[in-house]
Amino acid sequence: MTGPVPGAAGGVGAAAAPSRPARARGPLGAVPTAVLAAVTLVAAFAVAQGTGVRALGGVVLVLGVAWCAWRSWGAGAARVVAVVLLGAACFVASHVLAGATGAWPSVLLAAAVLGAGAWLLVDRRG
Image (cartoon, rainbow, N blue to C red):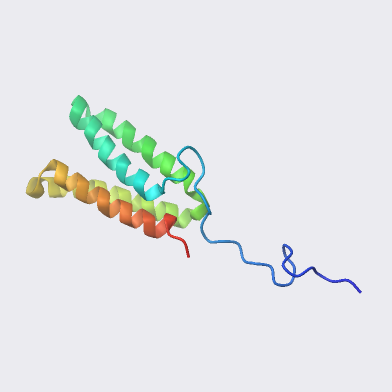
């Protein structure tokens, strides 16, 4: 008499699929998305500030968001969308805080918050 093999895909005792990917895909796969998301925000501001062309900083920001979303899509669409929305909120907050703290401190604070949120949503294991 034969039956399902314990532990086989779909069989008795099959493990549930992990909720987060074991590793992000693409270049720099070993680097957490949280780090890349935070660096994207800082780099976009640096490009805009350094060149005096805000639209160029916007291009850097959009490309960074797209890359981070693509590489961490395995964590689930809802988590990735949450990180993108958090990034948008941090972007707005950095502009609001800039008057009180200065441009660079507000961007660095926003990047830290974005990095922490991205880590919690797409990088953390378990």
